[in-house]
Image (cartoon, rainbow, N blue to C red; front, side, top):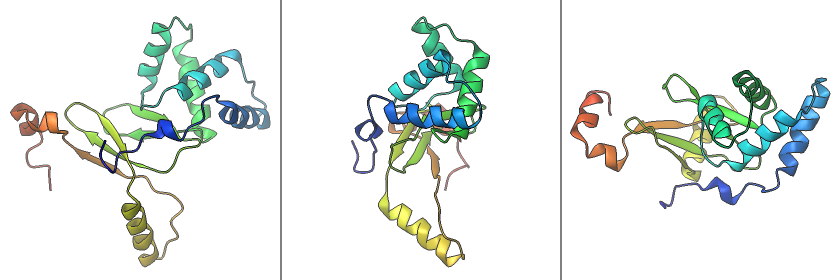
Length: 170
């Protein structure tokens, strides 16, 4: 693992208690029910430590014989985004990628344009630079989201992949 890579499984809770409490309170305040389907989705999502699309989540649930409709998955993801238990990222692939953030340190992402691998990393120097840039521009930084795009070592060794992105780099 590189000195920048971030393993968020090391700073997450394992019993989902605090996530469930946050979600239950969010639902209660809005007059919504914490259904068994929502509870199962919350547990499954917080068991995962990778980025996923709604369709990938649905495929995983179905491979585990969990019966849930596509509409329930999409509605629950929306509610979880609103409750700030999840964030979504648009890597330009036509689908949003989700990750849970409750209890995790801030981090950045680098996305391989070839194989679609997403690597999370932490760089205190980058965070400090962004804070400084914001101050120079008259802002107080509240949070940041940084996404970088490139080719991983394996994709960089494939001429057909490299040729697809010629002229787009720095």
